[in-house]
Each structure stands twice: as C-alpha cells, then as structure tokens.
Length: 633
Image 1 (cartoon, rainbow, N blue to C red):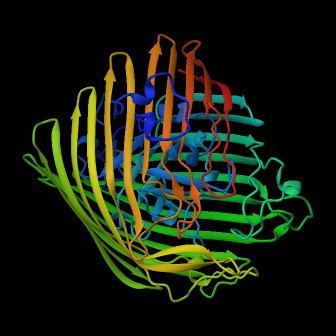
Image 2 (cartoon, rainbow, N blue to C red):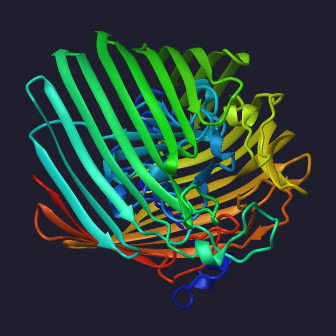
Image 3 (cartoon, helix red, strand yellow):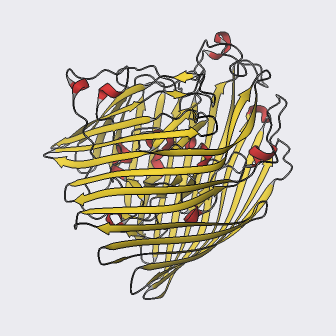
C-alpha cells in the first residue's frame, strides 16, 4: 500500500531532461512523499473484501474525489497517467487510442472494473480508458501486481477499479461547468440521496475538446504504415463524450438490499487517416460506447456472513465513420461471493461465470468463449503476523483449466513499521485479435499462440503513522510466452510474436507527510521491463519515472503543483526508435466562494514541453482550464 493521494510526482529535476524548474531545484536532494490519511482508509480491490489500508500486503493506491476534482477536465487515462507505477502511450490527444502499462506489463495485462463489473474489449483485451470521463467517478483503486488469484485471466500487471457515487442522506445536488484552451468544455450535474428504504444517484455529463492534430511529422518513411501527410493531417482532431450514470438501491430489511447500477458513455473521436477514409476528407474516426448494467443483491445471512449475488453485462462498442469498421464486445457476468468473518481473519468464497462475445466486421474464427471460476481467499492477523492466501481455478472454454494463487506474509516490527513478502501467479489467454485478426493490409494474428503465464515475487517495507507514510517495494515478475505485436519489414505488417520469457523487475519508493501547512506527495519508480530472449526493453516503457506534488491551503484558497518526469523509452521491440525523456509541470487552484460554490483552475504542461509518447503522434502542449462547481449542503 502506498498513499491515498497518489497524484505524486518527481522529486528531483536533474534526473530527467528538458524541463524548466526554479533556480537551484536541479541540485535539490530527492524527497519522496505522499499525503497522510486522517482516518484509516478502507480498500476493497486488494482482497475483494473491505480491508484497512494499513493492514494490506499488496501495493494499492486510492484516488479520492478531492483528487479527481483537482485533475480538471479529461478522462480516466489522463488522471491515471499521473499515478505511481503507471505509464501510458497515446496515438494523439484526448480520446485517441491509448495504452496503459501498469508496473511495466503490457496494456492488456490490466483488468478494469466499474463497481465490480469487468469492462473492456473482447477483441483487443484492454479497456477504453481514454473514453471514460472523470465526472462520474467517486474514487479509484489501483492494485499493482499480479491478481489472477482474485480476478482471473489478464490481471498480470494489476487491477484498476472505478467506484461511482452512491446515494445516502438528504438530497445532494451538484453541478459543474468549465471552459479551456483547445476548444475544451465540460458540463455536468447530478443529484443523490436517500429516502426511506430507497437510495438514488443520478449524474449526467458532457466533455468536448478540439484537441490537436493526432499525427505529427515528418518522420522516416516505412517505419509505420501511412506516413504523416501535412496537407491532410495538420488539422485538429477532436473528441466528445456524453455520459449518464444511475444507481438505485432498495432496502428490503436490515442487512438485505437490492441495487441497480447503470453507466453509459457515448463518444465520438476524430483522428488522422492520411487520406485513407471512406468519406474523402482528411479525418477518419469512430463512434464508441461503453456500457455497464448490473443488478445486485446484498444479504447478511448471519452476523458474520455477507452474501453478494450480481448479474451484470458490460459492452465495449466501436464503429468507424460510414460504418467502415465495427468492433463490438459484450461480457455477461454472474458472481456469487460470500464474505465470512471468522474467529481469526476473514474468509472469501466465490463462484464467477463470464461469457465473452464479439460482433465484428473482421471475421474471427472464434467469436465467443466462456470462463467458469471458483475462488477462495483468507486474510487475517495473528498477533504481529499478517497473512493472506488466495486460490482460484478458471475453466476456459478455449484454453482449459488454470490454477493461480497468492501467498502473502507480513510482520509488524513496531505498531508503525511492518514488512511483508508475497508470491503470486497469473495468466492471460490470448485475445481474439492475437489469435484470429486479419485485415486487407496484411496485419494478422496467430492461432497457435499459447496463454501467457506469470510468476511474481515481492518484498516491501512500509511505515504508517499519524501524518507520515512510507513504502519501499521490490518486485520481480517473470512472464512466459509474452505476446507482443510489431511491424516487420519489408511489408511492415503488424503481427504478434511470443517471447519465451520476459522479466519485469524494479523498485517502488513512496513517502508522504504533512509538513506544516504543506501536503507533499511523491513517488519514484525504477523498473526494468525486458525481453530476456533478446535483452531488449519492452516497447514504450521507461526505466525510471517519478512524481512530486505539493498542495497548500490559505483559508478559502487551495493551490498546488505537480511535476512529472520520465526517462527515455523505445517505440519498438527492437529498440531502434528512441523516444526521449521529458518532464512536465502542472499547476492548480481552488477558491471557495461560499459553502456551496467553488472556482477551479488548472494549467497543464506549464512550460509547453514538446514530448512524444508514441512515434509519429502528438501530445498536448500548454493548456489551461477554468470552471465553477456547485454543491448543495
């Protein structure tokens, strides 16, 4: 576990190139910090059960509503890109196809959950984080490290869980509106509360930006398909999303509650096609939708026994303009989980069934599969000893049976200082794209690919005290049969290859404190994500990233700064296309006009740094956003 406020940032500027700092800061010592927590934080994602953060044996960050509001406009990906252990690559500005690498693992090695429901594409194997707006989110939990023993296939790098707002107490009305550079606007409103046995929460929002040109150039021909064309690709490529989220709960009797959750995100995204599109203009694009609907029954069957039964369906849909392409995914899910308090610790027993289906303009040999899973977990404390054990059996209709586990042990050296170690396994079934994708350009999958298998070891030293938190974590994750896509000469068609073994090992440092009136947050990640067969770094992953954040309140005014730094990366598996390191500085301020109204402002990339996350694609320069927030009290 690291820090509640994980908008942490770079501690020392000198480690990273080309960023402007105040005089003298380049020689400052490294300060690693993260914000303190006034009350014990409760985390769910680490064990699938509510557990105090200061008793966890896993590395978890929680992003609360306050930090989400500080983040300004944008999507979940924009906020996650500022978190410890996270790196991203994006094919242009807001809303463009993006990849998130958690602890150096592949983009489809992270599971996304929305209120416990699995979300993402069946064909690509990864969620569309770039299209999910921040306005609907109450908090986010980030579990770093293999978690297949709790969540099944694909949790090789970790799990990200989004929690939407619940209704409780008197009716609460909220609204937000703001404008910014690059033609950015954001509007949102919501109401939540409870009355008698009913609870409710309803939110709606719209986010739109003109963005920047997705592509940039020039760069050498034949390194990618469709080189940059300044006559066609120099225009801005915008993004728009509209969201509706609703939660309704009904208490049948004390300890027995029914709930209905719904979230729907519709987006339109423009990007550069170099003239390759169905309507003859410069831009192509897609209309996309993410949808989750879940019916849940929570029942206290005994004083120590909580049962949760959930039926859910998630959709991930994308259709190209003029219907030139279609990739629609649907996952139907059944979960029955039982949490039982024992004389020592807590027991979790669960059954899960997932059916995955794809409807696509691409012809896949297999378009559906199902997974049935049984899982058990126990965590507890015996004196100063902290223990965790999880075991899961998955039966995959395509790849057969797989058993995964996590074993963790911790020891409290003092009430504030503890150490822990864990062993865990993970696996990932190849996606439908990995296996069966074929297009007219020669890009294709390989039906002979095997499932990926991971084995992780982890050691940590953690300190939790009033006003101060610290963590030092070492991890070593070996992944057999790692799947990587890349372009091959002379046709430059994209195809998957499978590595006999990849190894991702590294260190995570975090330390947090409230230093007088200053809230300081920081982290440093040193990771070596390497293909051991070729001794090359995995594509688009830096070996060092760091973050520093400082916040202070002056009465009604709160101001803060974030600094982020990244070392160099390579855009390809052969490590021939180097992407330089970079540093960014952001500023934000909030001013409370009265108990209901608040002004907010944010400036990102303050020094207009030109940097690259994916070869041939733009990133945002300096940009500013201002808004006003209303909250009835």
